[in-house]
Image (tube, rainbow over all chains, first blue to last red; front, side, top):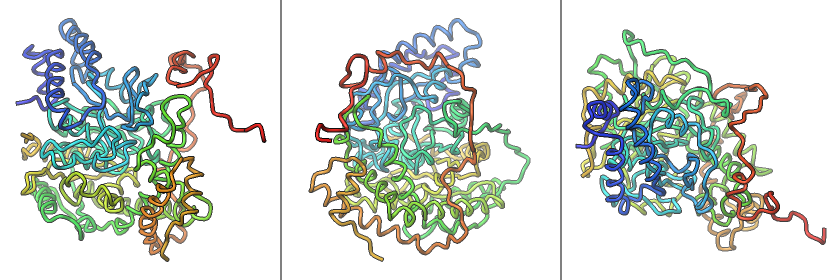
Length: 466
Length: 102
C-alpha cells in the first residue's frame, strides 16, 4: 500500500521506517516502470532529488525540530513543466522551449523547497496549458492510469497522473479554466484552484494573466491545505497577490451549500449527476443545509472565457521569438497557433468592442451572479466536468466540442474564486468522478473544512488504479 | 449574424500575430475558427447596459514597493546570455528590422 498522505510519510520518517532517500528511490522506480506507457514526465531530476533527499535525511537525524521547521520535509513533488526551475529544463511542453534551462525558479518552487519538498521531475501537459486532455503536448499525449485508452484530463495531465499512480506524493499544476480540477476529477484526486491573488504567479510561464491560478494535486484535503499554507502569501515579485489573513473556520456556525440549477442542465452525464447529488446528500446528513440557487449567466461563461483567455494568450505568447532563449515562432504547435490567432482576432481593430469589450462586461455579470449567491450560501457544490474522462482522439479534431466541455470550471476563473475538486465515486466503466466546491474570494478555509468532513466519512480518495 | 473568417482576413491576423503560416494552415484556421467566433454571438443576448467591464478580479490598484536594488536578483551577464542561440560581444543578437532599401 503506497504512502498517500504527508502525515503518514512524516510518521514513518520520524519512526525511521523509511528515509527520504528511500522515498526518492521508490518514486524513481515507479516512474521508470510506468512513464513509458503513461508519459507523465518530460524531465526527471534524479540527481537533484537524491542530493536533496540525502540532505534532508541528515537534517532529520541532527535537528530535533526538523518537522516543524520544514513542514514539507521529504515530500516528493512533481511540478508541471510551466513552473520555472533553476537549472532544470522547463519546456511548457512546447517545442519553442524544448531546450530552455531557466536561470531562476518560480516563487512557488522556492517556497516548496524552503519547506523541505523534493522536486523529482517536470510533468507533461498540454503545451502552454492549452487543453483539457493532455493531447496538445508537443512531447506526446499522456494517458489515464485508470484506463490507458482514456485521457487523463488537462492541461495539468502529468501532475495528476504522477500523484494518481504513486510517482510522487503531491504535484503542482496550474488552473486557468479548470486545468487542475478537471484532471483531478478524471484521476480520483483532490485538486485545488486557489483564489486568484492568493498564490504568486511569479516565474510560472503565463497563459492568461487575469485567470491563471497556481494550485496542486493531493490525495487528501488535509494535504491540500498544508501545501496551500506553504505556497500562498504576498510576494514582492507579483503585484497581483493580496495580503490576506486566513482566519480558522468557525466550526460552530451553520453551513449552507448552494446547488446551482444551471450546473445540472442538459449535457450532464447521468452517472456524473448521480455522484454529485450523492455528495450533496453526504453533506446534508452532517446537518449542512442545501439551498437551491441560480447563477443565470453560467451558459455564457464559455464564450466569455474563449474570448478573454485567447486574447491574453496572444499577448503573453508574443514574447517568444527565439532571440534570448528558446526557438522561433514557427515551432508553436497547432493549438497554440489556434489560440494566438483567435486572441489576435478578438483584439483586432473593428472586432475589439464586439468581442473583447463585450466579454469583459458579461464577465462582470458572471461575477455579480456569484456575489449574490455568496450572500446567502457559504459554498457551492457542482460537477467538475459534464462527463468522465473521454477516449484519446475522441474530440481532438473538433476544437469547439473540446472547449464546450470546460463549461463547469471556467466561471470560477473568470470570477477569481477558489474551487476544490474532491473524489466522489466511479462510473460503471470504472473511471473516477469528482465534484467541486466553489467559495467566495479567499474562503479556502471553508472549502477545506467541508472537504475534510466529507473525506472523514467517505473512502473514495483511498482507491488506487490497478 | 453568421460570422466567417475569409482567407485574406486570416492572413492579416497571422501577420499581426507574427505567425509564419502556410497557405494550407491559413485555410485550416479560417475553417476552424469560424464556428468558434460564430458561437460567441450568443453574447448579443446579454443586456450589459451600464455594466463596467472586468479585466482583473483582485481590485488592487497601483501596488508599489520600495525602489531598492536587490542583489539576489542579479543574473550575471554570461548566465543571462546562456540560453541565447546567437550572441555577439556579450550582447543578444536580434534579427534586423530595417533593410538597406529603407
